[in-house]
View 1 (spheres, rainbow, N blue to C red):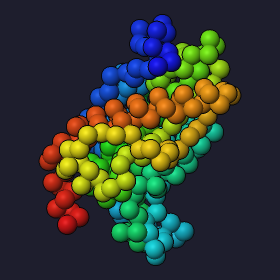
View 2 (cartoon, rainbow, N blue to C red; view 1 turned 30 degrees about the vertical axis):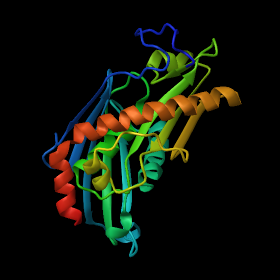
View 3 (cartoon, helix red, strand yellow; view 1 turned 120 degrees about the vertical axis):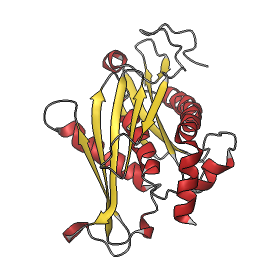
Length: 247
């Protein structure tokens, strides 16, 4: 696989992701929360709702979704607003919003530390927090970043220094198996990457077609590892809590 022999700042192979850590239920006032870390990149996600909303946010057919991105320091800017929209559209693909008409779901994403692949980390944190909150989903998502170095090597899960030096990088969000997240968690099936494509693709810079296809292939394989880790981190107690809610 491309990039296996590549020397990177932290010693990883090109197709290797950083160690993952997920801690849930950290915030007592939130309906669900999760802190997701990819080594030195960490995002804390909090979910509030379903809750009552008014005005333009109220929809008689399905729940409205709000995503708020809070930077580590300073005020929100163009990047944060763009990230909010990207995360919102990605999560709308898995939230069963029709179950909660006239209600709203808010997701707050707080950046704790950014050492690269921040958008992918936030996506994974948000997905874990939604499950922690007991929000019914059609499946899980797993996000991963992939980039092309100046030597035309393809690498996964970029560090901040790699993002700044690479000619291009992309954040890919892959759906998990298209079944209920409750049944998926309870079944303990082997993890398989979704073959129908991806939910979201956000690219910075330019890469050729072969490099892009390599990013997609390696990203798809990595997403299976991430989804497997997410299921294990959720635990069986969360599975049965969701089952009792939905059944």
